[in-house]
Amino acid sequence: MQLDKLRDRSLDRLFEAVLTLQSVEECYRFFDDLCTVGEIKSLAQRLEVARMLRKGCTYHQIEADTGASTATISRVKRCLHYGSDGYSMVLDRLKE
Image 1: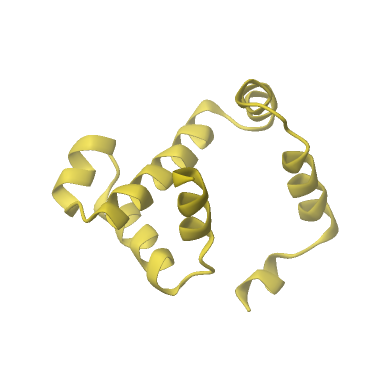
Image 2: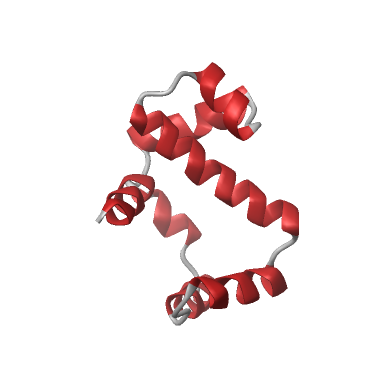
């Protein structure tokens, strides 16, 4: 599995730190310290692209609404179809 290549102790610590966050405000504070504004916006954009793809939006609609490049949209689409199901898991939970 591709995740095994990624797995290491420092990444485990990062994910454990994220799991300690208890509110959106805490997420803003932590990610503001951890990432650049561009990195945060890029992550948010990818999640929005995934949401729109699952909703059946066209590349043109997604590009217009999010500003994402066709390369980003294609990459997210590939992850939705052949990835680790992370996007689907999170998007399903956000619906609840």
